[in-house]
Length: 389
Image (cartoon, rainbow, N blue to C red; front, side, top):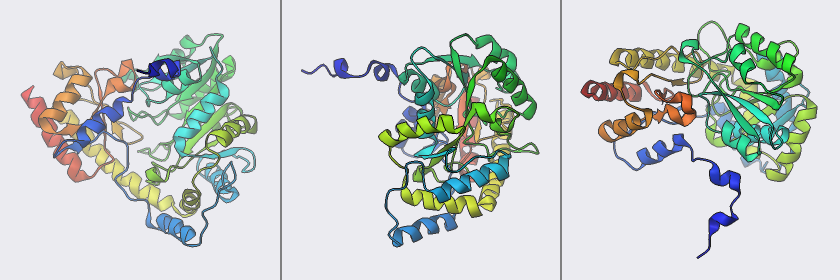
């Protein structure tokens, strides 16, 4: 009998499976389940974007792209960053096109983090930051954010966690799972600490186009002095409903994008060709698509927040992404038990807050990137469940 564990990488063995996927997998094997667990838009990729992908396939444009991505797409990304966020980049040296935003996060962390380096990670946050840091043999240092601060990172909390070994701060805003958004004044206070302590920043802005209300997303790299210290990660999955196309990008100083590109060359080589042509069309002509989807999400956001507060699962009003993060305090249940019972008894799948860090315990993540019909029925079932409690 082969002892396979003796062959496995120690860091990989110690990583926990994703708490998001566990409930999704259970729900997929059950009947009559309404799943509000996965952050995947229920919209199809816009028609003109799909057509561009089809057109290039029919023309036989199926060859490899350059490692960094097609120049045409990199130029559009740079125009996009300048037009939407006021930050200028060179398409030649400052952009890397990746297989989803997830690869960009991995390439960034592996390029920057050496064994023993400390990486600051505000939580609750997306599930990949801690494992990616551990696989790079870095040290994840969690900064707990609080519901009373609407889960925003404060400069004071950041300062308290910095040590001589701190190298990188991850900024996951707009936030998954809480829907929290950092306002300009919040980011300016963070930037002051970053400069003072000589840190680099990985700003995960995959939900940057999905903010609600009058204040739109502020790109961290647009703040004075931060472009030189920041790698911005973004992608096409959320803002253009292109999850299955698997395309993202990173922009930043060429001195940091260059090493990321070296890793990308050996691990991936190049992002999917057809997806790059489609994404170029999306950036050129897709502003209206983003606005339409954003308005639809906003309507769903108000519906689900009102419904959850009414049935006794209070939550603050999220200002970004497409998640709500209601408190379970009134139920007296931990988040795993709540989710398991809700799934078994009412066939509604949501994700335990503990999947996003220990400080997420006592909350659940509910995605509202689903239809009004699904959200309304899920709320009806959840109300029935809570009333029984």
